[in-house]
Amino acid sequence: MKSLFRNHSKELEDEIDAYLKAISRGGLIFKEGVLEYLKGKEEAFEIRVKEMTAAEKEADEKLKNIKYKLYAYNLIPDASGDILELTDALDELVDRAKAVHLNLSIEKPQIPDFAVESFKDLTEASCQAADELMKGVRSFFQNTGMVEEHVNKVYFYEGEADKLEVAIARQVFGSESIERLSHKMHLRYFVGRIASISDIAEDVALKLSVFQLKRNI
Image (cartoon, rainbow, N blue to C red; front, side, top):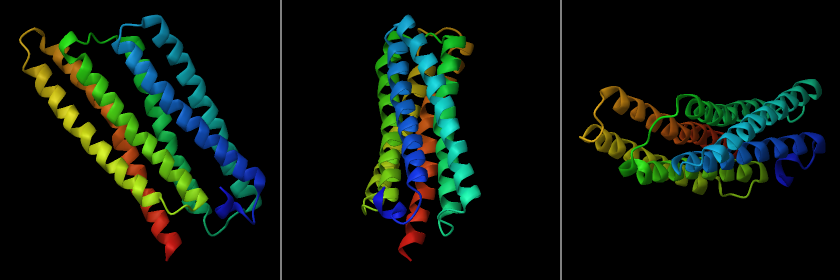
């Protein structure tokens, strides 16, 4: 993050770096947790739920520190609004990831064998969108000129997640092996929740693209 913070607070730079690491860690935990759930590894998944909760709490603490330093010391006045909006938007990623883990832990949806691989593919695509977003955010702070490349990849993976979301819904509702409509609707709900990670990544990527444009004007 040398470029944006070159003449400003090293302390703030470190806080933002730690915040981004917490968000990225949360994304990794989310992905592994969902995959473990799909593999039937209940104990391993429950450990991930606790790890996800801890990662979300850590991210919240780092975000509070960032806000305090920006307001208290009036650091980077020309970019503070964009930084606050961006970091606030990123917080939604870990909040949603934590919520999905808790929902899985509490509701324990029964994923039919024929849909497991599709759920895995959806999880991979949704998390890939989030991963590319985080690369784009780091590029924004480091001013590497790679922001738009990562933003475009976010859009691509979000589109892939959308396709998989529709495909799984068709797969589930077209299945005769799932007898209860309530079961089908329960599965569709979790399909949407997993896919929502990529939706959030797309929304934040759009903000990131605007902030990068403003910087270049």
